[in-house]
Image (cartoon, rainbow, N blue to C red; front, side, top):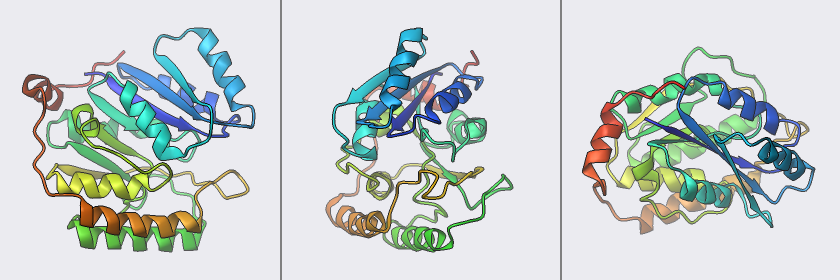
Length: 254
C-alpha cells in the first residue's frame, strides 16, 4: 500500500525543508504533495529549490494567491495516488515519527479514518496556550454532541483517510473550517473512525502559529451548518476490489 502525505504550506520557509526531510525518512512507500498557498516570506523559493532537486517522491503545487488551509488541502487531495492520505502541517508541531501509530488502524483493516489526538497517549506535549486548549475542548464537545462521536481532539491537524473516502467528500471550507466540516461529513457517512495519541510540539503566535479566535467562531458556524445540511449516508467504495485491498494490506516499506 502506498501513502500520500499532503502538506499545506504558508509562510514556512524556516521549517518546510526540515519537515519534508523527516517525512521522507519514514519507512513507507510514499509520495509527498506540498501545496504552497501563496507564501510571501521566501517559502516559494525554498520549494523551487526542492523541486529542482528532482526527488520523484515529491510533487509541489503553487497557489498564486493565499486561499487558506482548506483550499490547499483540496488541491492536494485532487493530486494523490496513494491508498492512504495523511495530512501533515508544514510547521514542526506534528511529528512524522507518529506515522506508524496513525496508520495502523487503517492498515489493520479496522478504520477508514484516524484522528491523531493531542490529548491522548504518553507522547511529549508542550504545555502552553491554556485558552486555546479550552476553546479546542469546547469545539470538540459541541461537535461530538451533534455528530454523536466521542473524539477528544476534533481540531487536530493530524488526520488520516483512505483515499477513496476523502476523495468522495465534497469539501467547501477554505480556511481552518476544514476541520469541523470534514468531521461532520465523515460522521454522517457511517465510517469507522479511530483516534490515537500523538506527540505535540505546539508553537506560540510569536513563533508562527496562525489560527485565531475568529477561526474558533467560524468553527462553531461550520459545525452547525454542516450538521443541518449534510444528509446521512453509508459510504460505498467506487472500486470494491481496491477498497478491500486497501483495508487488508500492509504498507510497503521503501
